[in-house]
Image (tube, rainbow, N blue to C red; front, side):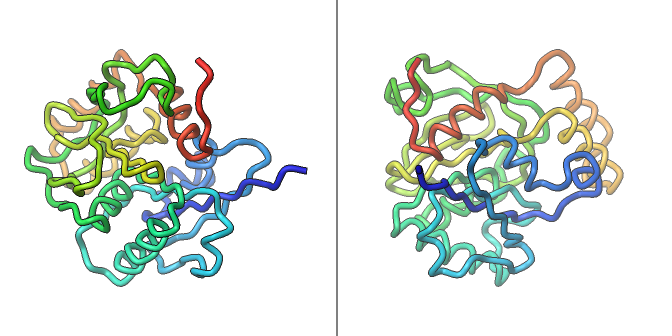
Length: 250
């Protein structure tokens, strides 16, 4: 019998009322995107101080760090604890997929610099340009490496300086570091491969209602998805290939 694969999800954000009602929580959004049948997924609300015991890290085949409304450069106790855990995962060469805040945390623990986005926040469907020379054919992306990929963006911070050992895999008009990898065990994405149009639109309405964005910014964000969708299937495949150590057959 094949050993059951085990994964851990570090949730750095509380569930919104909408996500609870529509999906039963962010855990289900992530597991339905990155999980496969027969796997075991544990989730830890790291933003509430919930972490696995360090002695249990070894039993997991891979980890996912979610986005957050917090800044990855803050020094809250839970963020410092998360940084310590990710440093241990780095030493153990455990596979970690970092998304948005998670992408920035990995840059931080490896000596990169994270700060406010120089060209301002982004909340929309955007295209990121792939650095084809940085991706080997037959890697997680398969043999057909696209020129660009559409992904939902929702952030106000960015990686300003990548760690020395990082390989930048994608950039965009506004951000130099949209995706990077370190060795074979860290894969980091500034956008949200797990988000869909419904989740994005609810976030837009919520932050507009709170006065964080202006109406024209909200309208432009929704217009970005008027005629097209994110490349979610491609993202799902690439992220699963990375987490599960699969090499695609195409």
